[in-house]
Amino acid sequence: FVKRKLNHNILKNLVMPNLFVLRHGEAAISSPDFDRTLTNKGLSDIERVSEDFSKYHLPNAVLVSSPSTRTTETSEILHSKLRSYNVSLIFLEDGYLAEDWVWLKYLEGLSEEFESCIIVGHNPGIMNLVKRLTGEDIPMPPGTGIVIDLLINEWREVFDGTGSVVKICTP
Image (cartoon, rainbow, N blue to C red; front, side, top):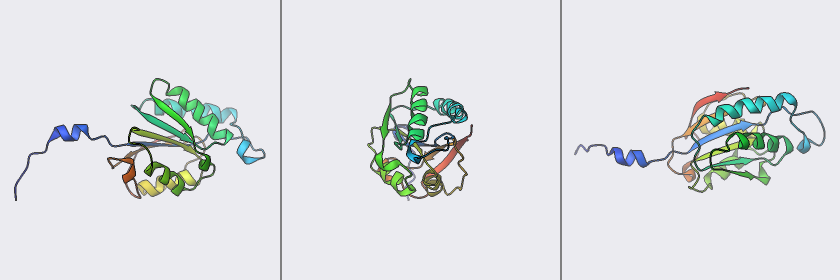
């Protein structure tokens, strides 16, 4: 058995991806569901949670959202708050009312150029994604955001249990 000294230079260069999961803000009750807009409370809640998210270092991040009206409004507010970072905004057609496995599959295929990913979606899919990745069953009423450290080196390594909740952001 040979003892080796830990090479801290290697550890400095490892970048573990970060995941931010956000449920859209409170939406008006109307039909069709896809076209529901945020209420005034929903807009102000997302402003507050976006402030929390903007305190994190987010170089080379991608914000991926369901294309519904309420998630689009949520994503645009968040994207505006993160304007000082290089954040790409993508609307995932399959993201509308997506189940957890849809988001997981998206994460697995994410380019390594992105160090952080922000998902804006709907329950129960995003709540189940958080549970799947962290093992924690965290209620996510509208406007709730969760910051997750992923214990992986590359997005393709993401799977059940590879995440750890860092912070729960509530409006």
